[in-house]
Image (cartoon, rainbow, N blue to C red; front, side, top):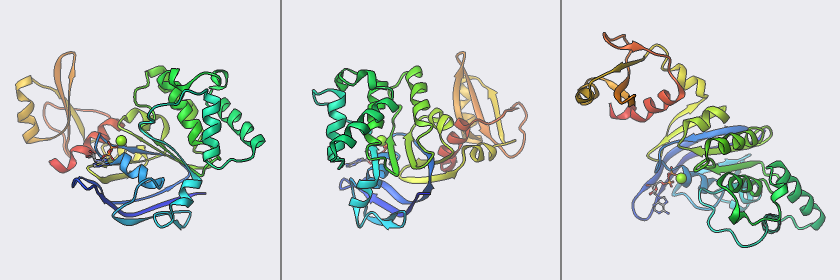
Length: 291
Ligand SMILES: Nc1ncnc2c1ncn2[C@@H]1O[C@H](COP(=O)(O)OP(=O)(O)O)[C@@H](O)[C@H]1O
Ligand SMILES: [Mg+2]
């Protein structure tokens, strides 16, 4: 079992933006979802975890080793799919992965060939190995990104918003490929989509404004809203009225009419009780502090 422990991690950028504020997390094997809106600090946290940027204070231990003090340890034992991979060089998929394998320290030629072919097979790109990654669809690029993150069989892989920009079909193929990766390693996946978490993650955190606002199993978050969630169709001009009198977690339009969901410990006349979803739980956490 691998263990990642993050203690009181804090980072403020030079421009004064506080990206990480007292982050504490403990993560073990399996797929861990980091869910949060844009700007929450997900990418900042992930870059710090793989040794690409430093923190102002706090500690990170991977299997007991202090990786902020010794980033080489984690660089060797982890793989990373950044949110923006940048430009792909004009070489074949096979050659690019082979090159990245060399950078990762897989020096034995025979071993490297075997590993590159196995990984391309694992992410269903073997039949495309002679094409350039630049010509791939979004889904294929992300699968290539996972293959390079898996080079050297790392104990931890970090995938930063891997499903962004994928169409529904590509996304489902991608889920199928990711689902097995957490069996014997830590997989941390960031996303702003509740759907990603629902499909893949056994443990999750919600991150907002640089802070971890919740940690646990998705079912635990949903359970916390049991019997407390109510909905109502309302006239458009009453949205503000309800917002100032109730803990409104979302206002959605259903067939053009505003429809609000609120959290309340007691039933309220005119509102219908409903079963909570993970999305409701997420919205309730994001709106918690403001009410
Ligand atoms: N290199 C940087 N310099 C200054 N501010 C940054 C830098 N990277 C990110 N930020 C800011 O830090 C906050 C968190 O960003 P980020 O970690 O990218 O969040 P997320 O990945 O959740 O969208 C944002 O306000 C962002 O603008
Ligand atoms: Mg990001």
